[in-house]
Image 1 (cartoon, helix red, strand yellow):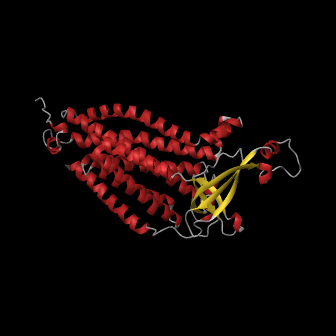
Image 2 (cartoon, helix red, strand yellow):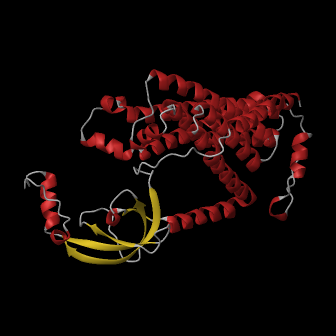
Image 3 (spheres, rainbow, N blue to C red):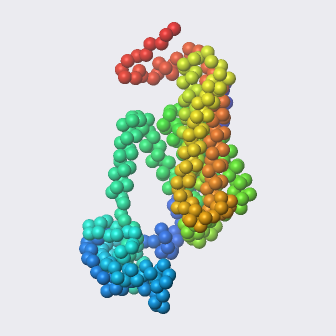
Length: 416
């Protein structure tokens, strides 16, 4: 009971501080800006491909042969092949916006990666300053239906397997996205410190997700405390090594566009915020699993002391660490696979690849997150062992067991 009071004395003020942080930093929406027409910062509308006919690329004027006539280069040779090939002229109808019903044509070259077909749903970009016949252009395929169907299959699978816990997990996932979209992102765009915003937002997500999915109990509170300590370690390590490695956080077109639109945003702070938020999901998994393992070990053998519980929990945690760290590294490697492929084509050395800022960011992100994950296992296991071993046999564990309905409609008889 004394340990539970100590945990409550830590977590209640922490939850109050998170609530105050949400109120103080709440942005009230992202600031408006003039659209640049670059990348994602474009006006887009839904459209449908109504007709596709084959035409000669030379007739359509889509050959792109160099004015000098030089065909010795790869670009020149490809242009000649396109000139002699067959292109497609697609007629696209705009289905949304002020110009709903308007049609335009677009030439699709034979070597183009995205080939259009009749009846296909697409997304078109709109540039009002361009000449009227060039204001619309196809920018992407409309993938909303398959994405929505896949999300539905995911939700059904979670509910069927997880039942009530699955429903709570989906609700917490929705709340997490709401915190991300309505608080974290707009607050950063409003000019608030990205690190402070990420800490407050991630803490709110952690409290809501863990208590909603696993209930208000000492077991969940221990997992919350272990996650909080690990996030603090990740924040400190991330801040130190991002500064030491001189990582700017401005390494690609998207971050460059963000910096151009909002120069006041601290891009290195944004990088650290991403590390904290990205590590939170895996940390929740590790801390909850370790806490549950220690609680189950205590239920199986109530006479086991905290040292025995800690040793048994750590043995489980070692297996968890090995799999989770490997998963984290492979996840980041998979995301950066095209970049790594480019370095492989250039036959760059490992040192050169690791020293480039693009890869160095991923290395720092992976290693800092992995250190936090590794540290969360002994920290959470020790806290759980201390709390659960302080219970007297036959008191709270027995009450918890009686409060849980029997599974499968049958009671479970224990040997005495």
